[in-house]
Structures are given as C-alpha cells and as structure tokens.
Image (tube, rainbow, N blue to C red):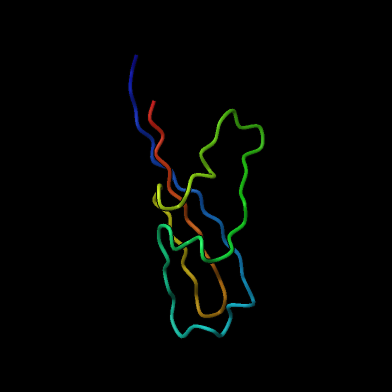
Length: 81
C-alpha cells in the first residue's frame, strides 16, 4: 500500500458590515481564537467523509479581517492515506 499526504486549504470570503469601521488595519486571528468570532458552517455535499468540522486549533486556520469588514477565513487540512 502506498502512503501519501495532501495539504489543502478551504477559503471562505464574506463582508460583515458590523465590523466595518471598527478597525484601522487588517488583523489576523489564528487557532482557537477563531471561535470568538462568527464563521459560516461549511459542508461538503455528497462527501463520503469530511474533517471540515475539526476545531481550528487542530488544523492550520486563520481569519483575516480588513477595516472595511471584509473577512477571509482559511482552514487548512492534512489528509494522510
């Protein structure tokens, strides 16, 4: 049996008007601190298995928030087989 490792990132982008004007620069939040802000619940339609709901402190995740309220959520995964 052959082994391999795949690194992938899932990105979500949205604008949260509640955050617009609250910051004077872009900030980045990582790991377990991400749970303190709202992020959409992603799901994979027709997936056999998924680790999308793993806690952010267990995967390589970050949220960047711009001063205009634009939010980029990036969640990293490692798949070993």
